Length: 146
Image 1 (cartoon, one colour):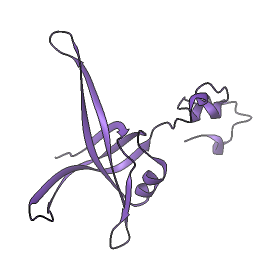
Image 2 (cartoon, rainbow, N blue to C red):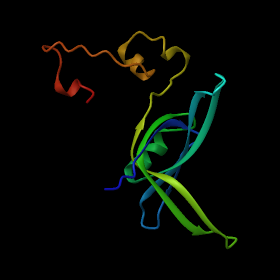
Image 3 (cartoon, rainbow, N blue to C red):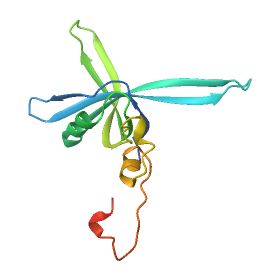
Image 4 (cartoon, rainbow, N blue to C red):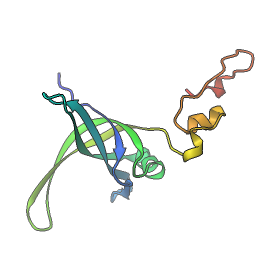
């Protein structure tokens, strides 16, 4: 059995680029940065940043281009794929990218005042986990966020 699965949590380095194939299918591409922090053998804090190219197809591509922008936090689940092509200069080129199967958007920052808001809706918009009152008399299935 083989497995080609990637999970990345990072921030977009630029706004996603949306385009269409000749057949009309939507495709978006974007890059995310992930960082790693560790202590070296001398106990000094070290950091390294990796950049990953991501491709997403179909309806998800439209949503990514509409709702994500530079700096957005995103969780990408997908697979690694390597492509070969010949450049305009005749040179053979190769790239490895993540083909996204699922993209989950992170919290959207609304500004300085969003984090200090007292309502559950404002807290959720600021990236905080909303409080849901599960009083059976008042709660309807359509009110649940899942």
